[in-house]
Amino acid sequence: SGDMAVVAEAADGHEAIQQVHQIHPDVAVIDISMPGLDGLEVISQLRHYYADLPILILTMHEEEQYVVRSIAAGASGYITKRSAPEQLVKAIRKVYEGGRFLSDTAAESLAQHMASGARSRSPLDSLSNREIQVLRHLALGHTVKEIAEAYHLSTNTVHTYRLRLLKKLNLRNNAELSLFAIQNRLVEV
Image 1 (cartoon, rainbow, N blue to C red):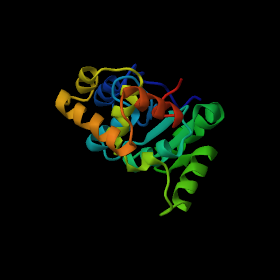
Image 2: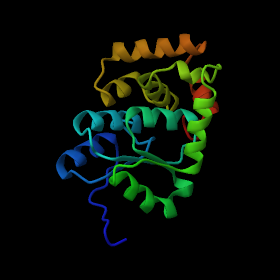
Image 3: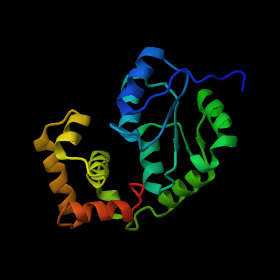
């Protein structure tokens, strides 16, 4: 569409943040499951630097967890790749104008999350965003050292997150963590 142009593309989360610093786009379109820093981390870092930058999540993930956490982290909109082609332009316009945009599936997920209120939900609800990130990386087979480098954390800190995950989720090892992440669709198989 004539009034829009892709001004930069990024291969991973770190690059996405650098590109925004350099180019100052009108809207940032972010995927949740980027290599390196994941989308939730990118949202919160961009929010820290640019309070007013509209951030649109474009992802294959339709899970309630991701929708809720993305909006909580400061995303202005959330659309799934399935619904993308016809909705993307509309979504970009809407968030650029200061509005919010949720695809039907994302809106439904958010509504379900709010409706389930105090009722007990997924064990994922007890995890912080950082714990979810560490869980995803472990499930993808990344080492503690690689995770520490990606998030500028010490290996001790990542070990602590791993132990906390095992305890909170009542699991015994990385294999069980991986299986849990796959069952809860935190990683694509």
